[in-house]
Image 1 (tube, rainbow, N blue to C red):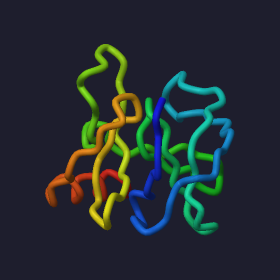
Image 2 (tube, rainbow, N blue to C red):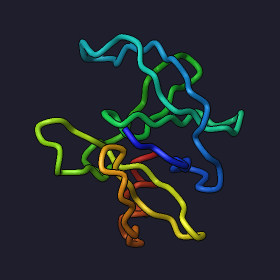
Image 3 (cartoon, rainbow, N blue to C red):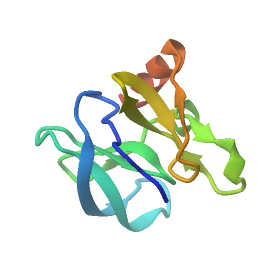
Amino acid sequence: MRINSVVCDVHQSHLLNAKCILTFNVMGTSDSGTLEALGCLDGTCDRFYEPSRGYFSVKDNGRFVRGNPNHQPQCRQHDPEVTFLYLTREDEELLLACPRCGTPAPTPAALKAAILDASV
């Protein structure tokens, strides 16, 4: 997997570089276990990114909050496996990139807004 310079979807000026091992239990589902994810370098931010889950938060009580996955952009070239795109910067431009393909693409303003809406 080729992941470079993942940008926090909330701050967009902070990188997600901190590799974290998270233990999670998604309420209302049987989805639980451990997960290696990239965490925001801002100590007050609770945002993480993982290719099969996209951007998500872990709240103070350990609750895993993903938002609506339908609002997070996905790479459709890897079906049936879901691969969520991540935000990155290149020459001061915000781009979306697939962690498997690695090729960044310009991010339209409407898509940027959808990513931010999904992060709330």
